[in-house]
Amino acid sequence: MVVKVITSNQAVAEAVKLSKPKVVPVYPITPQTTISEYLAQYVADGDLDAEYIRVESEHSAISASIGASGAGVRVFTATSSQGLMLMHEIVYAAAGMRLPIVMADANRAISSPINIWNDQQDSIAQRDAGWIQLYCENAQESLDTIIQAYRIAENEDVLLPTMVCLDGFYLTHTVEPTEIPESDKVDSFVGEYVPKYSFLNPNEPKSLGTLADPEYYMEARYEIDEALNNSLKVISDVGKEFGEIFGREYGLIDPYKCEDAEYVLIAMGSICTTLRSVVNEYREKGEKIGLLKIRAYRPFPVEAIKEALSGVKRVGIIDKNISLGVGGALYNDILAKLDINAYNFIVGLGGRDITPKDMDEIVEKTKNPVKDITWIGLKED
Amino acid sequence: MIEIRFHGRGGQGAVTAAEITAKVAFKDGKFSQAFPFFGVERRGAPVMAFARIDDKPIETRYQVYNPDYVMVLDDGLLDVVDVYSGLKDEGSVIINTVKSDLSLKPNSSTIDATGIALENLGVNIVNTVMLGSFAKKSGQISLDSLIEVINETFSGKMAENNAKAAQIAYDQI
Amino acid sequence: MAFNGGVVSEPGSTRRNKTGSWRTFKPILDKEKCNDCDNCIMFCPEGVINKEHDINYDFCKGCGICAEECPVEAIKMIRE
Image (cartoon, rainbow over all chains, first blue to last red; front, side):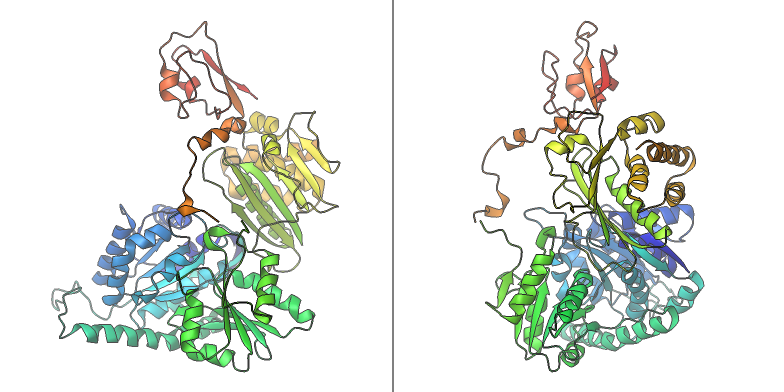
């Protein structure tokens, strides 16, 4: 075990190297680019024994991923923002074909106006595709989550592609101390990928990505839904097992000081680091406040959230995305599934920095709500 | 917690300077973090980068608004950016310049980092030079760890030259 | 608030962004040596050299391509 001061992008690349995919088709895009650069380097240096495909677009990156995964090998790809938008059609196909591809998404705003900075609109726009979506808080979690993602995606009760989301710049370009686990430990944790169906076995020929007429289509969709629901338990189990081996346990959610809280802030991704210190600050002043970090956004962990929020008076839900006209995506999911007094804060779109003053405003407006949905940090004129 | 803000231009190495600072501080046995804020990504455009150093894990992810130290890698930025913005009362600023007619605040020191870089590296990439002066001036990072990280970050002649440039800046400021 | 999808409603506004301050080195042309080949004009990525080979230092970023491309070495790069 060594500790290195690295970015989340490098942490992801290290995790990919440890997870040993056989095919890596990637197309570079800010702020994901260094992931593809590190992986190209590892392959060139012989540190990662994989086919690195320099595809001509993101549409091709995910298409090649489907081809490789369909052929029965472990696959990794990565993208961001407009790249993920270009993948959209094939993102659905990957889930529909039940291929356990692992993809990192460096969360970045969507055009127009064009913007290279962070928010989570890109991955949120893919939430209905049938992929598992796990949001990371720091470089360590990014590394650990990639490794777990293969175990989750390749589980026979799941067999779904998994998207590991990391905030652009706030994580992708931030260096911080990160533990790199030993290779043999990861080997025995992740294991060899043995596909359920071997599509390239001439003795047992199978077709993939076929047409399903009205006679079959609904069943195929139902099975994806079922698989996504199955993944709830798998994500928990894999996170626990990871904790036993590597000393860092992960779950669907991560509640912080929620047990006796009157008010709870709910958020996803890198902002949770700062929010935890905000909670500590207000706790010192005697405020009963907590933080609920959502790690698994898809599948949506309704029961776990309900349990964490039992007895909570009111929640402030922080979204780095906007489903235009109805507020943030996380807010709407919680409203749909929980009977709770909830208020929504739209923050950090297109990289707008979320300052201590913004945090105070969020806490204040959760305690004394003014309206259902508030945009934080908006300029006055 | 010590917070440092770097002002530079794309290509001068402000982002690498912040990253090296974090790596050096970690080597010194502290916790650290560093990240950039890019404007548009092109050579010459103004960029900012931030570093934080603490004895405990860092629980902050927003930009540095009240720095203890500010490093200015290009004096041309003094006209376009308020490098003193939010600087703590006891904070200090190190500016790469050869000009003597700048109106600087009392807590500022200057160094001809471009001169040292051109002489030792042949290019105007001043990050390691600035960090040499930062190590001396602030005492927040050690020169030994700085040289170690430079040797891990660069290789061969480049590492040697950068280490030398850092040492010269350390001795000079 | 009238952002209109990020429309730039005023033409020529990039003229206000004087990129000349980005320079470390400044190109100086010796017009005596110049053989009028116009290479510097053609190669300048910023289009800051006019037909008389005057360099507009408000916008020249000091990249040095003109000096590199000059066949008679009439352009020298001098530290600012």
